Image (cartoon, rainbow, N blue to C red; front, side):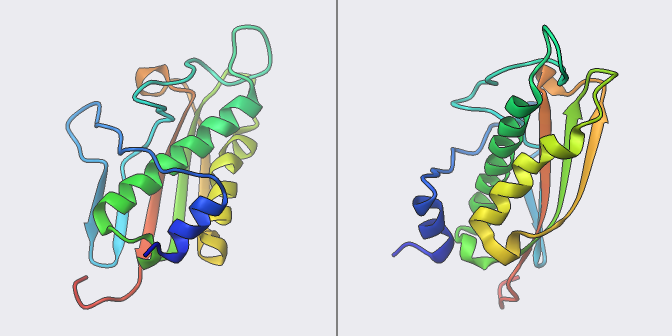
Amino acid sequence: MAGVVDARLAELGITLPDVAAPVAAYVPAVRTGRYVYTSGQLPFVAGALPETGKVGDGDGLVAPADAAGYARTSALNAVAAVKAIVGDLDQVSRIVKVVGFVASDPSFTGQPAVINGASTVLGEVFGEAGIHARSAVGVAVLPLDSPVEVELVVELEDTADA
């Protein structure tokens, strides 16, 4: 029987991807007590980045609206990493924190709008439990020249096996 969160994902037409393989020496997520910390997740789709480069306005740059979509994808990749650790997303009591990195053209200052792509989908999926604290940071470059990277801190329900 599908859980509440799985049913919500289906209602939204979202299928969580397979957990992306790490690109270096780390794991996609770690559980400690009632918390799961994800590694930074890139917007991989079927094992590949849909676009690379810096975010900004102008020729040769990743459009901010596209980057917001990639932040959404990155957040869903992070949710998949959480699910791989806990099994049942109904155990999530709160998305505590989202940290979003945006590979930014030096003149670009719209990082919060880009990372809204992650924040919005987390709210859609988890409802009130998806409301979180957040940082949206512009950086010079990200791994594999990804335009965005998102990581999550997730609190789980208090269970005996925590």
